Length: 409
Ligand code: 0SO
Image 1 (tube, rainbow, N blue to C red):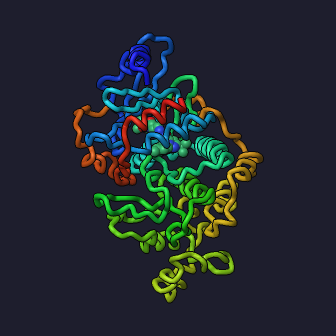
Image 2: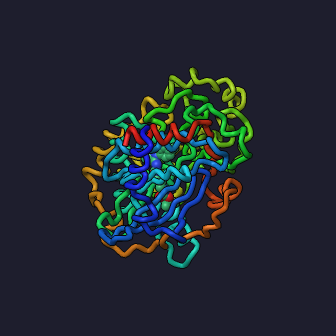
Image 3: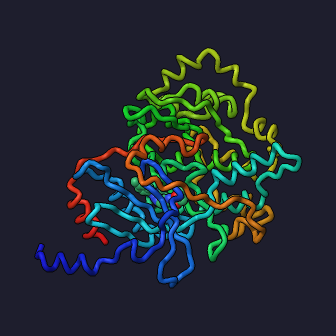
């Protein structure tokens, strides 16, 4: 490229640090990079934004291909319940990519944790029932949009469901992805081989645990069922001791045991395709002669224990999400039309907080040590939630990545 042209481009290029104030405002850190809370310096709006910094690692010429993927995906999507990418800043000199996205003050991981903590107190208050309904409706709306566009989420869990705080979008769900699982685009790709990391399989559909080769919409729907149950009870429905992942297998005996202890053991008449799954033989050899010990368990019994009536509209819909046979699971489209939303009052609201004061604490800033060795800290930020290993770094010329992004932007 003409050197003068290149220089004039560099001069005219807007810099993130000239337009946004974010110093000392780090709110998230992980293997993916860093997230800052940010404000426009010119005050042209008074909104908060999140700035996600994706760094090429210290190794020169090495760059994460995931940055490319994330930008390519997010710039195509626009829906009120999916995180919005406002802008991308490329900083050529230090080879950084900055994504300017919505700032959400809350997320379901913190919201559920808050309500769960109140149970130990004198006056427990579970998540309000109208809030549960509005949350579920907006999650389904966002997922229906993604699925209609053949985008599968693949890692739905409470930490990825953000909720907007005070402002013009108060109480609106934004589906996001902190972006760990996405780096493993095949469900069979081992989460191991990197550092021993703690991962949760609580939101994983049974067919994945039995070795299904592809992600499907039904896998996202199972996860939504798990989140719905957790909102209703403040308890992760398929809670399981967290394993250190060192095996290469998708099969996790303890997680399957937990699912059967809630749902009962799957009967072949209910799930015809189960025999075709790669780990079916493992399942039968390990559970075959004890499957009768699960015969007293059912979702209805589990939910009744947690004070959710099995003749309620909420329970009937939950059962349609948490159906073992993925081909029989409800779709997001049908779920949006369910009696729970259409017939039963109250109707879901645009502000999930329903105009009530928001009791949840705001996000706290974390120390910005500016260190290069965040990899070791990544596993410590949330001790009750999935930790997934660092991104697969792809050797690429940084210049090529910047060029690829420039062509599309
Ligand atoms: O706000 C954030 O963090 C705190 C801690 C403040 C909550 N982080 C903002 C993350 C923004 N990125 C994001 O949501 N990415 C993303 C969304 C999605 C869909 C599926 C919901 C559309 N995918 N991704 C995504 C894509 C993430 C990572 C990669 C590599 C690709």
